[in-house]
Structures are given as C-alpha cells and as structure tokens.
Image (cartoon, rainbow, N blue to C red):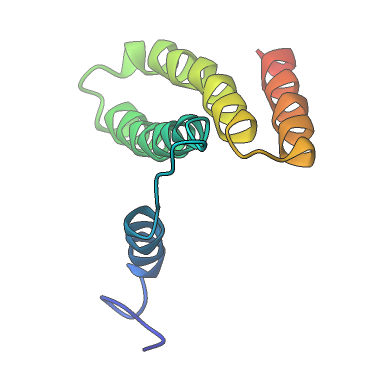
Length: 107
C-alpha cells in the first residue's frame, strides 16, 4: 500500500515502526544500540518541540517557553552524536560531529 492512515499522514510513523521492529541485535553490534537511542532521542525532541510550540501559543506558561526551547535544543547535539557514533560509518560520524558543532555554535 502506498498510504497508511489518514491520507498518508501516518506513513512516517509506520516507517519508523518498521525500522524499529526489523532491528536485529548481535553481540558485536553493541554500539548500534547507541545509534537507536540517538534516533529515539531525536523523535522525543521533535515531540517536545511540538509541545513547546503549543504551550507558547496557548499562553498558559508562555513566559517559560523560550527557556524550555533552549533546554530541548541543547539535547539535539547529544542525539546527533549518538546517532552518528553508533552507525559504524566514518562519514556518519563526521557528519554528526559537524552538525553537533553547528548546533552548539548557534547556541
């Protein structure tokens, strides 16, 4: 099927579940768990960004939204480093270091 859910809106979540359930753990791939943790941390950070955006425009605690935005943004460099280091690829590692340095330089 081309589309999952409401007109294909849930396709990315279906792809994520397929990726998670096809994951095989081997004894010598212990570093790839770090990569999976990094990917899950990135997904959680996207959810937190959505929550911060909703709270900011609902004006319940809008004064603290910018502080929470900075807290969540500081975790993105850790998630990128975990995803790149656990992938067993030199190019992924260099790309994750580059993007982590880029996000730190913007802070």
